[in-house]
Image 1 (cartoon, rainbow, N blue to C red):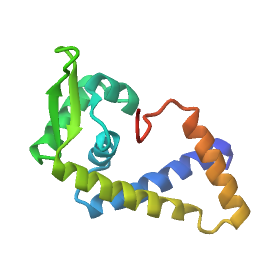
Image 2: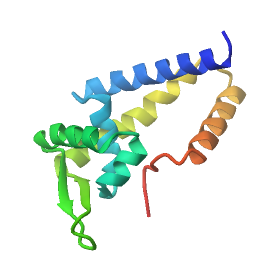
Image 3: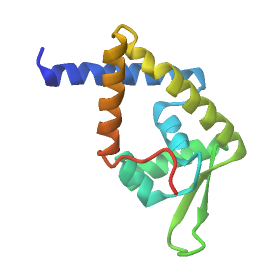
Length: 141
């Protein structure tokens, strides 16, 4: 297998582990990701769509399903009434915090068979990739 193949299978491994965690909380991976993206601060729907790689329509459908479970809520922006902000409800905050904590606890386990130095290298490289990717940070200022 070449490098691309290895990255593909690493992606499958991560997605499978994440799906298991989400299922433990009766969430789809998309719902869990959405909750974690807004757990600390409300975000603009347009920003979320771009950051999560979803069309505005797909994000709206995801929000509709998650809102029906009383986990997120939409509100107009105080600065611009055309902007819709998405935040978590109190129940959504509790669930998001639990999923996020469980993910950060269990996901690193994919590297459990590596030696200590390789685990540190993997962490350093994964951090560098994420930090330079432009993906949504977990906390924004």
